[in-house]
Image (tube, rainbow, N blue to C red; front, side, top):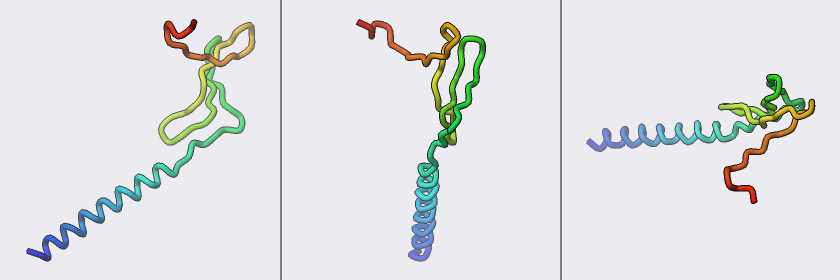
Length: 81
């Protein structure tokens, strides 16, 4: 019986150690900044990709005003005074 408990304990510890290793590897992956940002655009609305990570692209939405691209700032209703 004690050998069986020893093997179960070793198995549980190995599973936990593997989970910690995988978590540490995932957290070590930094976002990859782009030196020349990519612009995915339509006629008046665009998304400027500034970096990308393991799950998604990161960047800003842009809007064309009088021929120049301006960043969009999202404001909640009632936040302006």
